[in-house]
Image (cartoon, rainbow, N blue to C red; front, side, top):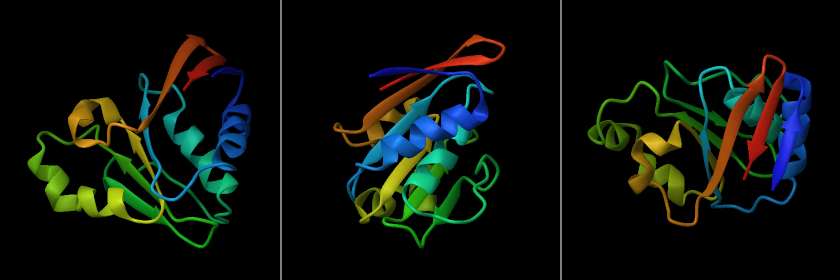
Length: 135
């Protein structure tokens, strides 16, 4: 599937629609350059899953949990991780097996550690105000 977004609001709306059919145990690997809209997409996922609160980038904390919606959302960011041992420290395998949705920014960094049936979502900057979102 391919969609285009012209604003952060539109990116969140696309993700909100995408989230409506997500099942427990789904793993999403989000890739794209800095500023492509990965975190905005996850904000839309959280809304689509029924989370009613602030969603922020886990760049420095590596992991945020959002509970209270239809399914919990585990938002991870591999950008600052240096090696796979750090995945053990955050308990990656436990989150991937949990009955929620795992959204992993920079998931291609350790793609071999994500399930083979992960959904790959690529966000590409095609102009200053336009993004292509492909899954």
